[in-house]
Image (cartoon, rainbow over all chains, first blue to last red; front, side, top):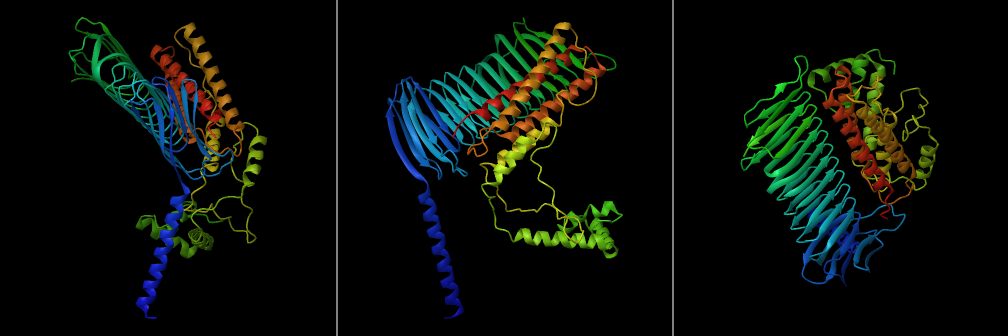
Length: 301
Length: 240
């Protein structure tokens, strides 16, 4: 056998091994396709530890689940308990290794959605009920016109692009991005950064961070209350629509920059603190910003 | 190792890895020409790296390994540092024991070793750092008696939430398949909050009664309690 022939033979053997291994690993996951009748405005509870969860609203009165169960999973449960439909990826009690399961779930558009994930990514779209989304390290994204959104992670990212009127978003280190939300907004993080762009006027905004930064852009409703507090994260408020309100900005050692005129003054000759209190227009809205060392920027859009 | 030049001896790792700047590498090379101890240490490091490179990408520990570790964790008193492996016995020739093997290809099974690392990391953070930040300073004087009572309640609540979380961590089944919280991220978040609390307390010492600082201190404790309670809830949640 010539050297070329023996090399070719070796290559063919390697290719056969790779193809066989690939086919074998493809057989380890289990394809699923199941559906169950569900109330048009009931609750759908989804539990999946790892992999992905993609939820989309539709006009049918049933919950449909398709996708692939990961190696190591025991089964998929799809059951009804009254007006609650439960979709759960069940794992063996003592499994050492679990591969993620990828679920695509269609739900009645008016459903309330409750999701619990660990590292699974969560995506929800086109649902008008309330969303209650929890992950640990998985990223969460929601879009559409949900009535209310609660999103909570530890280290995953949160992205909300929904015209919801009430949002609560919490993370420890994950960044939070919000677009289109109006009304009542509560965002809390330890070290994640928050970028917030509202579509309509803000009625109520609570922002709390330790070292994460806030970059908020929007308009204030006439009686809005905006409270932002951070230890070392910078806070930037870009306000449009000729804001009218009472502003109170206090920082122990940060800087204050104000595009609306009045400048911050030192709270003491011997201490670095600054404070700024002023009123725009006839007042009405109330804006309070407090930091330890984070800088505060009030900008005009 | 009896080398008198601790500075150069400390750079042996980086020299073996080829990470030193040329001038420093040359200084170490010149030192090795004269120091038999360091030459032996460098050769031992090279041999270790050769062995590590020859290892398979991942090597799972025996199933019963965790039972022994769990038993030792339960026996340890607060204040000790759980999760630290027993030291290597010295080799017969009296040289320093090999450093921990570097296994760039190793991928620990996430089902339990990730939890163990997270729990050990968190325990180190919480048990070695007193709730008052361990600064040894006197408690700050807040602006008003009501605020003082609120701060005491928050400090007490923070200690209680911490104890509950540690109890939850210890109570997690040894062979639980699913880590239901991100322990490392929680530990990192707590470190960030504790650092902020320490800064605020230090500032209050120079400006006792400052209402802004008192308010920030209260917020910091509230954040700490909230994070610990969320982590406890996640840890005790059964998703398997």
